[in-house]
Figure 1 (cartoon, rainbow, N blue to C red):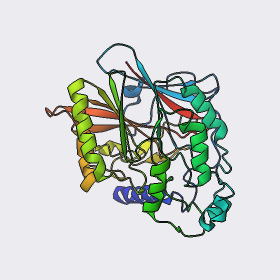
Figure 2: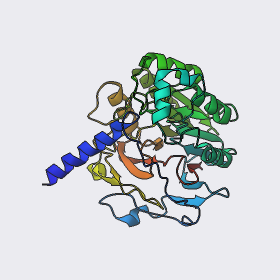
Figure 3: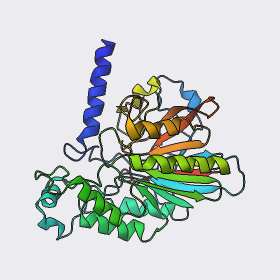
Figure 4: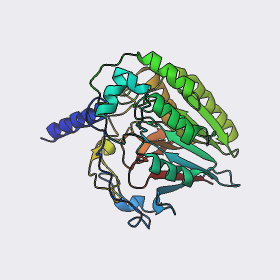
Length: 364
């Protein structure tokens, strides 16, 4: 019976993940109630089959002056000096078409059928989140900035994010590389053509980018969402990532990884992981053990995964979105000497919900 239930859970998780743009909305179209009055203290929980008291004070939720829900964490780089502040946001889903977009049958059908956040309805939450983040040392966005690829989404992203905040770093999600999003007309462009458009309009390299901040933290963004499924890294990312890890180790940098789809924890404890459910009506769980890139993967996925889990002493955190909810997991890893360690992996709720959601990362 247990085996049957686990199999059904796995099938359900995969079907939800693959639905994306071609099926139902990936999340409810009814945002949960505002957290502005409900989140005022340190919260805990979210890990199935573990004692809650292990996670007390691991993070806290606060409400900013403009109502944005802020999940705060602190990471010790071991280097001292002035703290570095990074604001992470994800899954903005700008759904917007210009008149020119609507001349294309694929986008016209998407526009007519994709009603969630239609006509840039996320603008208010986006502006609130960016106002909160504007004084941070770094803003990082982990994908699904566009709800689908359109001239309208490109223009709004440039106007509200990339042009006013030129130091933003961003990776792709699974939505930017599609134009058919619940529409009824088949794609009339190739994946390669769409990726070329993204490459011409993105703020940094669409596959891999890194930046050192304050001589203490290295921020790395990697695309693992554009090919959807359970995620997929690229062969072109392997060597830059390897070299950056070598540089970070030589200079004592704390490494923070940002990608759209979370990776496997390598720990069966996380086969069915509860959302944090802080003021949230969503009671779903996610499989962060087998329904992710992991040790069972091959090619570039396995190479990237191995580099992550074999450098657990310098990789101080991994950050993603995709699931439209808050989760916390830990990736089983080792140091080069073979010592077992764990890498915290934070999945952050999307900008569209409540009054907006961000994670504030303080690296001291």
